[in-house]
Amino acid sequence: MAPAVKELGPSHYCFDQDDADVKYIAKHLPWYGPKYSPHDVPNFYDISGITEDPLAFKKVIDLFVERYRAAGDKGPTHIAGFDARGFIFGPPIALALGIPFVMIRKAGKLPGVLVSSGKYTTEYSTDETVMRLGSVKSGDRVVLVDDLIATGGTALAGFDLVDSLGASVYEFAAMIALPFLDGVGKIHAYKDGKFKDVSCFTMVDDSSIGPEMGRDPAEGTPR
Image 1 (cartoon, one colour):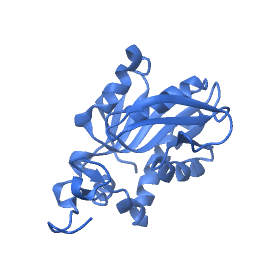
Image 2: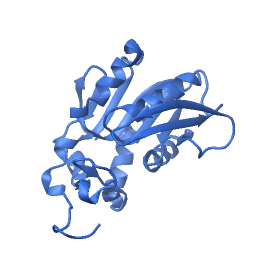
Image 3: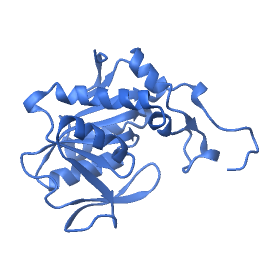
């Protein structure tokens, strides 16, 4: 049975953090401080803790699949994953559902005729993402998948891309949420609330990943 789903705010949903499966996933999400991370952030979550544990990885995928399979014919028609960690979770979800997986790639990585998000800012950098023209079309319902939502910049680039191709975002889904950065709120406030009714779903709140999951080595250990 899937964990209970709680509404954290308007059109923002999350699993019950006391559920055994959610706790298991959270206990497989180590983090590193800025000295041992690729970016200068307080906690950099390492999703290899999920991918290197087959049971944890399977739980993540199965829980997403069950959520979208339950929607039946009104569910998503496509899964779109963000470069690069969305490529880890998106394809197995799409395969299990029997629907296409579409790549949202960083600029300069995709061939063909492309649609660009334009430049946008994340908590790490300034980026630009693209999708191939024709990868989704009018009438398609797309789940946007990433490992984490922070400021919402990357997510909004995906919203804009799907919208510009004529499709609609069925839901934005991420394994980890950083609520203090209010990424979901920024999605729903964007362009005078253009996407305010689009559901955002997150699996694990960062507060459920405790300090005991810190994996910084002893002080002085070289990077």
